Amino acid sequence: MDLVHSKDVDGIGQNFLMGILYLFSLIYRGLVNFKLALFKLGVFKTRSLDCFVISLGNITVGGTGKTPTAQRLARDIRDMGYRVVILNRGYRAKWHGKVGIVSDGSNLHMSAAEAGDEAFMLAKHLPEVPVLIGAERAETGRYAIEHFGAEVAILDDGYQHWQLKRDMDILLIDAVNVFGNGYMLPRGTLREPMPHLNRSHVCLMTKVDQAAAGSREYIRKTLAQYNSEAKIVESIHQPRCFIPLPDWYVDIAGDGIPVTEMKGKRIVAVSAIGNPASFEQTLEDLDTEIIESLRYPDHHDYTMQEMQDVLRRAESQGAEAIVITEKDAVKIPAEVIQSHWPIPVYVICVEVNFQEGGSEFYSLLKSRLQEKLGDR
Image (tube, rainbow, N blue to C red; front, side, top):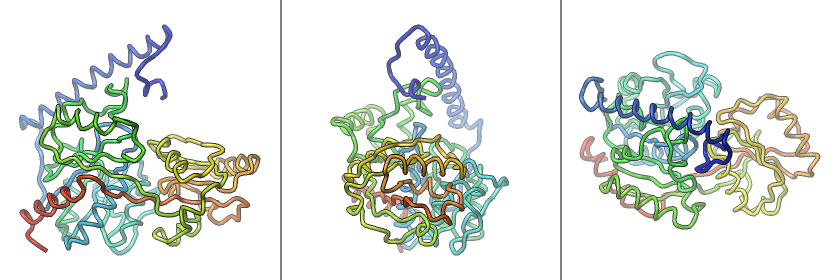
């Protein structure tokens, strides 16, 4: 995977492999462009919903912060007085069907395994917002309108879901890993060619506080090349607190312990997310001492044996705490939560805070909502 993410390769074998992957990436690029052209020509039909549709997505694989951004956006729109729902694909969900109700806005109806970790997290964080899963967002959206009176539907990871018309396309761009390595899948990490940036109405740069010097300027310059009309917003992922794993399951919005109390602590960082480097950087910025980082594949389901191995490694190195993300917390076996481990497991809780361009974005969002749905 490191080889795919790299821009330069060394050696005959690596160059040959990258050449093969590059050939496939050209084929993939052509197929993506062809499919989008068929939608634009009307050969593939797009469907509409009788509500305001917002798409959140990206053009790269890996973690750009879609889930916490969807959480923040849904909460803010709800607080504006609109009935909002989240439509999630249900990636790696064990539930299969057309419309899956993770939450009806009052009660949870699925486990993390049934719903998929992202949808389950959203449902836990937003107890008053219905969360539905299903491959066809037009189907789940219609169900949400009919049964929950949805006025606003947020498509979590919807930039490539061209089957459904949207009123606002919000494209997330990771300021730490800017546009991946510039190559399409499978040679690189781009889901779509760079010119496809032109479809977005809003470009949200995430984790700008961790960005390298010049990254934000490079993103703005690139966007100006392909999409000079998009509103540009910057955001950070602000650590809120550390919550002991058993407490997190009881109250996901609990206060936990202040982030300052982890300063100087010797910790083992464990993650199975799209961008583990950003998670680890956050911990370093809080002045923790990471004695080991254990990375698993994105969306990995932890086994009890794996967690016991993590504990043994942490004990052998004199760790004072094991730290995981919320996305990992939903995949930890229940036996770990019930066990009394000698080393505590903490969940770091972060929230998205909009920075430069945030007020202008909310003004745009409110005016678009009022235009279609009326004032609240």
